[in-house]
Image (cartoon, rainbow, N blue to C red; front, side):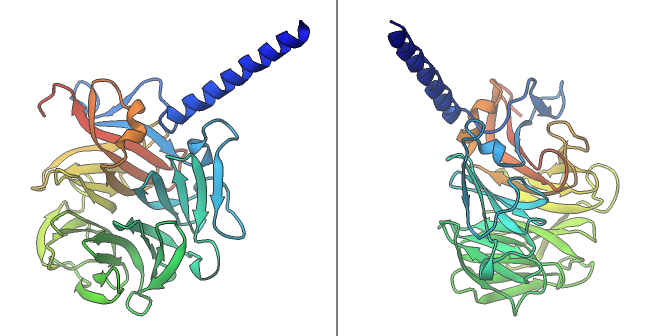
Length: 362
């Protein structure tokens, strides 16, 4: 009788454990909040909801101690982000350039894994700042100290480098329709490469404060029409250039009020054509209408969920909402994700959903 009871108890415990594991597989990643954080604050109709954050391996762990790690290299850094900058979401994975660990950190959200690449030999990263992913899953990393673009394939393995004789200090990179756009901070230029042959196609920009010129540009973004948005940091503005490199518009100016910038860094454009600009000094992200009017800001300094600590980059994602669906509040219709990196603080990568309250017409 005791043996039978023990067997029954063992079966019950195994069933409970399996149930917990399976429930962990179906829940959204990251910790949930007791109370949702929205921007703007009530009573204004919300447009962004803070969802969760990524700072280390624990955020992709199904249950404590069960996350699968994968590493490329002889030695592995700590299992947490140290000083992140650029990011990309692709194929269920969040890729993060860590400028202190000097590696590409990989959060495999879909498969609950965590790892690194770019740690050794010819693939070793020295100062990875930003990356982009093409339609084949190739990753192009702008490495400021190497002065090169480092390429990893669809399986996250190193393949090649290029641009060393054409670039001084590459700090950001974007891909569109077979072309690679590289922001060179020291040369104050945007260099365009053929993404397949790695040959230089054209260069535009130059040092100065006239329209179309830059002073220490730090980041760039592209819209679907091929327009280029450049964070012209020292000049305190964002410049919009056409596909031919000619100046189209300027967003903001140097200042300390909404709609101006103290230290503009990361930029991104959403499907509505709205421009998102990180300000490292204000520690927030400002959103501008396509015509240039400031609409709102979010983030702000502090240690609470949704706040930012020395933010660097912002990206927009329309392909991975399903991974975070269970974190989105009922009644809030999410349209795309917004991710912002903080170089310090407890929440290194903050994830937000942009949308509107259901029934709201604006």
